[in-house]
Length: 425
Image (cartoon, rainbow, N blue to C red):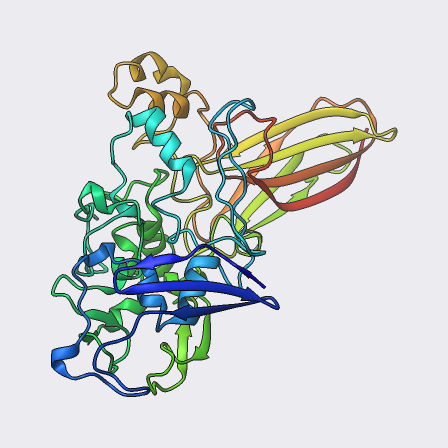
């Protein structure tokens, strides 16, 4: 057995104990006016004076299973890979964790050293990413034409990041959930929590622009839901369900509950289910190839979200002796702004207030845009190959930061690998 550092909460102390591979939460917090299994009176109801900055450990005293998923990625395959900003000589930016999995992205949204470092380098350290620390908000309409930024919390309340109350606390001070429950705090049933509206504020920005970064919710709505490619909401893929009670020791019925994991770019399982890669030689005996990259499993574009995310399609043609006779590479990535990234804009970019971010995006353009939900992207290649037998090797690789030195591969995940033997006459 070993003890992790104590996590101090507003009404007590939580100590997380790991023993025999299990996580237990032992809480010093005593809920007011409640015997075991009982419900407090109206005068004893818990309030949330810190609002959306309420430490998640406060909620974890009762919602133990949900807390360990949020804080430790419990039950997932998520890994917090080391990252560097640009150079191989840069400090490796990582979050240590004590288990075999990494915390959920929401848990370290306010402390992840990589975006903090990037913000300092590109935005002079200003607190610009309100998605990581919003005030309580009302859920937007699913059909809203433009998703605006949520209201940010004060600077001194931002380090705690995305908390339980960031999503569950209403502007009126009640805890919302998809079911009607009795709890030691004001509660309100809000079925829309099980829809993609819950994710819209932080996972989309502005109006729909095909190809642009920060469009995930709009990509889901316009490319997946409206055309009828599926009925899944964001939670159906990113918060897999289990049957359990939502809070221990409150006589709540067991029901289908979403696991609070939000698996995505740090999950090999989630990444591996998104794209399919097929290659073929359309004309026999000719050095002409097609690569079909198909978005089979994602309800949005791939890659999505930050323009730093990229997917590399790397192709090699090896002759009978194994010598590489030809190479080709494509990059799929969101645009930084509302137009394609292009090196032609580099001089113009230098005059922008966001010159660092805009310049590094255009320096890698033009490139392939993200692959939309349900899309089959076909890429052709006609390498100059002498007559002979060849093996074509193709790899799809997901990159958490496409702007760093290509030699740094710790932040990459192999998605798909395939090969095809061809003859050229």
